[in-house]
Length: 335
Image 1 (tube, rainbow, N blue to C red):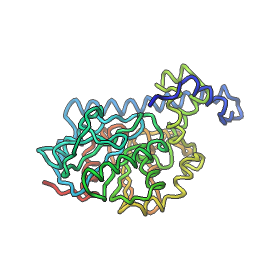
Image 2 (cartoon, one colour; image 1 turned 90 degrees about the vertical axis):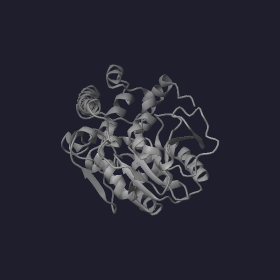
Image 3 (tube, rainbow, N blue to C red; image 1 turned 120 degrees about the horizontal axis):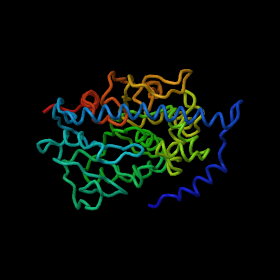
């Protein structure tokens, strides 16, 4: 599906923007915003570089057990997340022919043999357990990906003959999972939200303002275009409770219903990397993208994992401690 023209979208954003200037005026506000987003972005890049160094020294997930899965396990990707993000996790789960011996990729209600979704699987192995969702566009926001998730999970149920599916919602994929739970009647098994900013991300709010103000040079430095805005409007927040984000406020108001649609739900994330904060201080502990306090929601366990390296937001699926949390939470059996 073609994306909206970035130029026309940006003009629409500017005309509809409700960005308000502070007491010192829009120019000063813009410069403060640019400084903050580029500074936070630099810290994020440093965390990513450390994780890349670890990967070069030793492949991830080499110190964790092989496991057997009782149920199909669906991986729901986040914003800008491509299937390759989960290669190490998929390789560990399917090692030695376990759990169907391979991953399947699910897009638009069809099951594929390849990440590019060009080779349709005529009949998936009923013993297959590992399924990676692939959405229409890596920039699509949760209200656009949730209907796709509904179609994709139906395809997994048909292929495996099992109604109860366990889900990993990674990053914004956790929000897509929550929208699905909110809007569709099918109950699921266990759900883990990994690195999901349930109350938003300050970095997302800063980036959205750059686009709304059309600060082209800063957008280029931050790697942003107008096409990023719909998703950033879902992830951005200026307050720690996320109430200034209408998408998150509405979703969080129905949290109890979403949890009730699951067998159980757990939230997992990092806490030790410097992260742009929506609180009084500009930085707080988190995973470099989502501060730890934004993960938390009432009535469910939250596992904040110490450390750096693979605890970086973009590398959480490669972290051994995260994997061990999955083993415990989903009830996978070491083999």
